[in-house]
Image 1 (cartoon, one colour):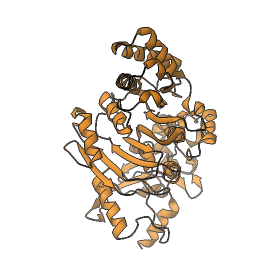
Image 2 (image 1 turned 90 degrees about the vertical axis):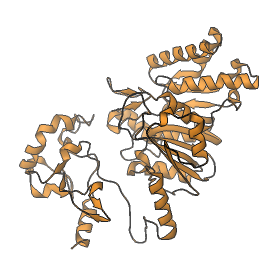
Image 3 (image 1 turned 45 degrees about the vertical axis):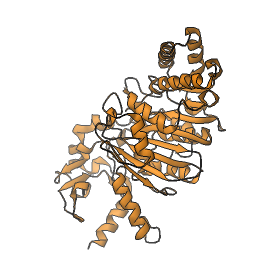
Image 4 (image 1 turned 30 degrees about the horizontal axis):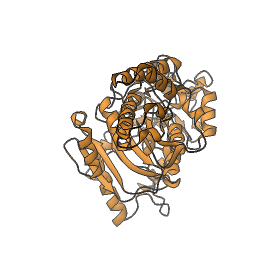
Length: 433
């Protein structure tokens, strides 16, 4: 699995993806980590150093701030607190920061002192304090599937962070730990996979934010732009969340060419809710509540949704039993989703509607099906479905590779990540009779 800007808890050989400089500068600007402020007197946490992309930019801004305010840089030893779990990566980050400071005319001895004071080897989630100390928490938390985390670590994270429920990836815990570290008016600025805004395992984190005294300030969806040095499919978004009363929210979608635009122009577009050729922006006077999903992939669609909720009725309604969900995550769509019905037992096949099947408000089924390994009682026994087993067996190595717990539960290699809600499926079937 992919980790963004970190090697923490990664299995050996897993990929590490680094944030591009233009995105780093945008995140720092939106966070308000600016040289105009007395940054030496503030505390900024970088929870997952990686290659030091954020840390280098933060160091440059800190030096500029000290020069503007006449503050000796040696008084900024506690202004940055950066964590890296891998000792070798931490040593590389120290060397990079030292080089950055020397390039800014900081004496080598001072640069070395500061870099070693700022960067520590440790697990941010284990080191996070129980009281607020930070004015900023900025960075790119790791994106690691639950299956990739050793069971003892996963148990510790779950017991420490209430938002890490269900199949929550580790970045959920990073969000909660970061937010808990904020002083009043402090800001958490992350670029991270945005699936938690919509799916079930992110519901506890959404509730923690919207009910815990935090304010969602800005969201910038960056799915289709080069935010990282390597192409990834992590659906990234920038989130700016402050420890303050909820106010207006701007939601933006980054468009092709944004990486060539000046950061100041992008920040102005977001601040004034003014769309441009490289950024679609909309502002909303309020935000979602509780565990409600945050559908932020399109500012225009979100604007329509908010208008419908305000003028008609809420799309999710407990009184009527209306609930919005997302599709089943299989972990291997090319195995479990087929065009037409495969030659397997008929009760293992479910017709599947794709987003593209919705035409002019009506479902026009494209013929896709879901090969379903679940029944009302749980995961089916393949011995009872020989044709189903024959269909899946050529893919066993691939499916087994999704789960680090395969040795403990070898009989579950054929499961999908999510379980089909058969009760809901039968209810819909009954309604259409």
